[in-house]
Amino acid sequence: MTRPTLAIVTLGGCDGCLMSIVDGHEALVELLSVVDIVSSPLDASHRPLPESVDIVLIEGAVTTEEDRAHLLEARTAAKTLVALGSCATYGGVGGMRNLVADDAEAAVYGASASRPQIASFVEAPALVVDVDVEIPGCSPSPERTHAALQALLGGTELAEGRRNLCHECAREKVDLLDHSAEFVSDAVVALMELEEIDAKRCLLEQGLLCMGPMTREGCGAACTSVNVPCRGCGGPSRRDFEQGAKAVDALASVLPAGALMHMEDLTGTAYRYALPSSLFPAMTTADDEEVRRD
Ligand code: SF4
Ligand code: SF4
Ligand code: SF4
Image (spheres, rainbow, N blue to C red):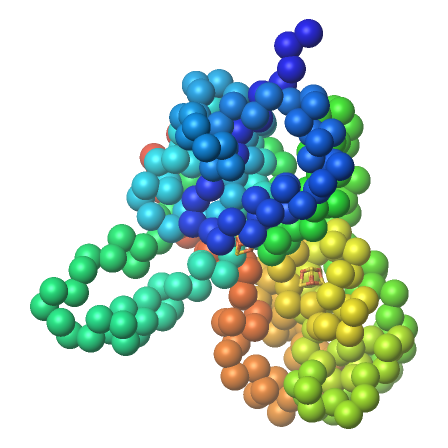
């Protein structure tokens, strides 16, 4: 029997999502026993992407025209296109680069006439394709990645929900659920400012800025379960939510106004992983529509 084919295409990312495949250990051995990997950056022979592949995993975001071309090629080749990680799903951390690109370039190269033309600082190309499966996270855990791949290969539904992270976070929420409570916390504090962290109570109620209420479930509350506030790498809980706007909206309703002033880097806090996808409708071009799939 012919085995399904799988390819991995990397765009502008950090390779961390590739590690979520490799770190699957036994699950990786299981994967290799049921698919043929036909093209991958992990493959030393650098085989090009074939014209047709059953499953193509995309890691990283479109940050250059070259990335854009590779993504279009992948969409054409793939029967199933999978966005692996928050860069591929929402644009990711690199999606904020154009906000600081000029300053960063000037800081590194100054006004030198020999300043190189830096490809990665070009205007971010429009996002271009629809994907069939999303595996969010920066990076997604190996368990999450391999569970999604197994579901895909087994033809079963992906079981992940679209509620917010607070639903799967085991911390006790009292004021967060009490609509008569004026605020859940009087101030926002940094993790190191807390003399003691209550290991059971909601971190937002302890004054720590947690993105759980505006972030999609699915990671098993990996950070909050070890006393670290969620940074939002799971992206918005619903596709029609702007995660950053939702963050300001939600936090403004549970924190006093002065507390929000602690969000000195509003974009970096509220839009850390999903700024490009928040702008997506405005960035899609007519040409792009031709390669989109229902
Ligand atoms: S989602 Fe995170 S881990 Fe994955 S490529 Fe992007 S920055 Fe790296
Ligand atoms: S700690 Fe964060 S994720 Fe957990 S209940 Fe509180 S706000 Fe939600
Ligand atoms: S808790 Fe938040 S930041 Fe941490 S892995 Fe889950 S979604 Fe990402």
